[in-house]
Image 1 (cartoon, rainbow, N blue to C red):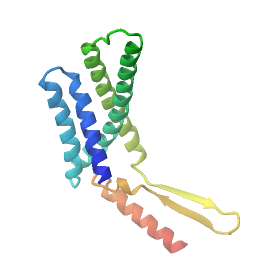
Image 2: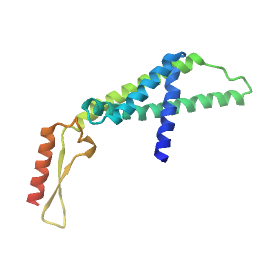
Image 3: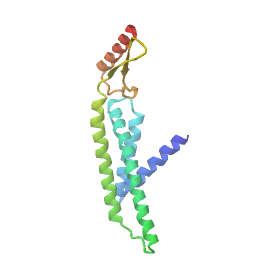
Image 4: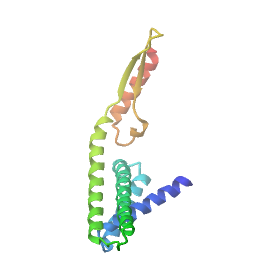
Length: 172
């Protein structure tokens, strides 16, 4: 239950910040579309397009939350220093819109870069051998993250992974 509340809080936080990219209804529309696409990719995980969307949107959401959190801390500190100097905090509507646009663009670029470079790392499984000092045998491990056994993982690679694991088990 707590995780669900945390999820709703983060979705509201993202919606509140992304809607600032445009002063009219377009900002809310863009924020809503991004959040609905994120949720839709989780609900329709059986299809390859939704699985790719989920991989992208979960990385994007974490980057966007972090960047918007830092942006809001900066704005609060700026407003706090203005109050301490006994001056009126100035309303910088254009600066907030520009900052929100830059953060949205940066978070989307970071997510795309992480997806492109990270997916190359997970295309192949890894076999690692470890020689133990106290035993005469070699310990062999087959390393692959189960999160990547999804529709994007090719069937041939999965069959090779299973065959290699069976071979390691028979020879041990």
